[in-house]
Image 1 (cartoon, helix red, strand yellow):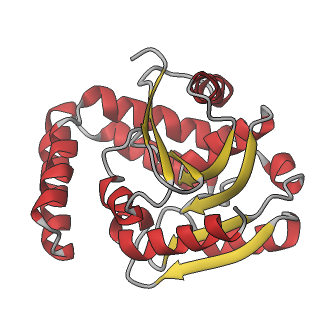
Image 2 (spheres, one colour; image 1 turned 90 degrees about the horizontal axis):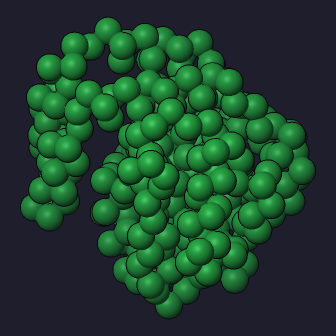
Length: 251
């Protein structure tokens, strides 16, 4: 895949555009999508594994949206996806609103992204796929997921390999350099923060404090106690209901 891939799930309500985190695709969003239950038009993306800049990545996303007649909608930026979302808005995409799902503006701890990148580089490629599968089995057991979601997550894990690992490392380097604060300061469309209480990757109290002080469109945060950094995946039903309440309130 040299560009980006798009899937559109038609629904009865407003358009919601999902921009994935550093994993780069829609493999972790199935439970959240099903919890939306066709009440929105859900657009989801998978990124190229090539080393693309945020500007180029947002250009490709914008081109796909335009080609499919999507000229506006709510953006859900999951972690790294928030950086794609800000870059998309800087290009002139008409966002009806923004949900930062474990997302951020300028990452408060860029050293953390560098450390994570170093850890990824230190892992031998031969154990990447087994490690993913073991982690997925553990998550399924802890969350007591249903068979459909468990199989979906195992399929996601089976498709992870050295190239996906390298792409994640590249996206971490983009996080270190990214600084969309000027875009956030100019945003008057509604911006909501959705996070999990336990998040070792993004310090959400620092993110929400900055948003409250600097972003004119910021409407506040919802922190789900039972969720982690992957809030859409670890608490899909509550996340879906929150998102639906926000997008339908302004549609």
